[in-house]
Each structure stands twice: as C-alpha cells, then as structure tokens.
Image (cartoon, rainbow, N blue to C red):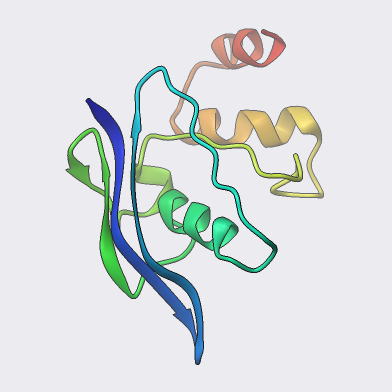
Length: 116
C-alpha cells in the first residue's frame, strides 16, 4: 500500500515549468529516490511534498489523506534537507529537535530520539 502518492504535480515559476506532471507512489519499507539533472524539479517536488511550496495543480496524499495545501507543521512528517541546517543559525541538535518541539514531544524523549 502506498503511504505517499503524488498525482499530476505541476509547479511553475513564471514561465519556467519547474515540475511538470509528476506522478509516483512510495510504499512503506521501500526506498524512493528522485534522480535527474540539476534544474529538473527534484527539490521543488520535495518542497511541495513538505508543504514549503504550493503546487499550481496536482495532488499529494499521505496515508490516503490529501495534504496538498496542508501547512508543513500539520503534515506530521519529518525530512532532512541536503544541507543539515534548515535554520543555519541553529545547531545540528536544534535543527533536528525543532520539528519534535513543534509537535510538543517531551524534552527527554526529544533528546533520546536525537541521540539515537
């Protein structure tokens, strides 16, 4: 069963078609890689999945729940960017802990998860 579904995703920046009709499914326990040359839309696709960009059209589902326009903090997912520091002014620990803190995970549990 697919835990992530991306259907007919499109994102333009002006006249530039950054993502054009992308469709795929990711299933639990499997590794999924987005491969392609620089500028082909990999990062923009991931940003749409994370909620940092809104697609112009298409749909994104997580466990059959449509999350296309759900804010990032309400999606219940975590991700690591190519650069560890989403917030460069914070430590590695701070960057990793941030999402858990937003979800109000107890401090001792956050420390345990990050040290793991």
